[in-house]
Image (cartoon, rainbow, N blue to C red; front, side, top):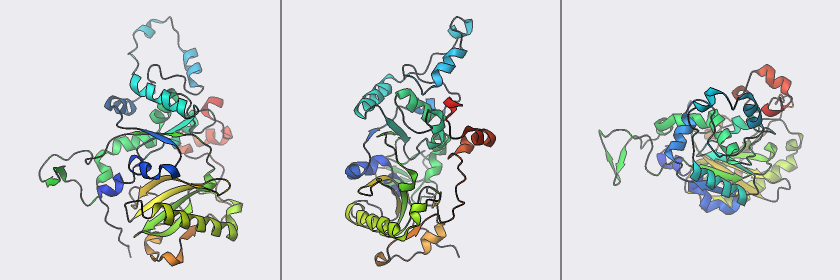
Length: 339
């Protein structure tokens, strides 16, 4: 038997976008600056084939030196090259943000972080120290590209789509727009800090009740097996959700990604996502599991924890987005700049 999902509307997606919820939960989320909207010419740049970086964007990890050494400045082909793309205003904004965030940030486009492209930078993380690093990650990410390509498809399973809204009324027969009113492509630039994946959790809220939570990282961790630790994590999460989130977030059905600091003294909100199989991965659960759980606050959330020691083969995340498996296995965790 297939259990029904709550009705999904465009509002459910828009409310989960970072720019919608961050002003309310700023005190409970890592520091961030939102550049909204992004210039349309920059979106076109991200959609273009090839890996040409904008002018005056600064060095990009350790890649620019090797690229420069392969070129011949005195060749005829150099003078015939097309002019580099240029986004001086955006680059200036990124320089200012970097300066205010101790020269270390990580970027995100709307709902997609370029985590699959982290291997492009030294250290294989999302730590960007120049505008060039930001551009390189966004330009190299399949996740970002898919978000740009999906267009109107992201709204396809919303019950109030594809009505065209003009002065609050749906207009039949009008040309279908790419996005609903209120949507814009925007760049989120967060202050960078190390976030151990073992401390990240995804919470599932249905009918304004916290019904389940699970690890975001699908690997086995010995310390997560202790029942005392599990109860501590669960109780802190319930308290945080009830006191901070429940009455402030406007939706009844959604998921929430949180991060516990190493001492478990504080919880940070990382993201909200729609309660939808099209937009959100249930991770250690199936959506059938989540939908079948009773909505009873007294029960507390069901916890999903990896209990099999053999889970997690040590391969780098998103290695299929990078290069052949044989190269990944030989790399021993090194970045492309170190190979």
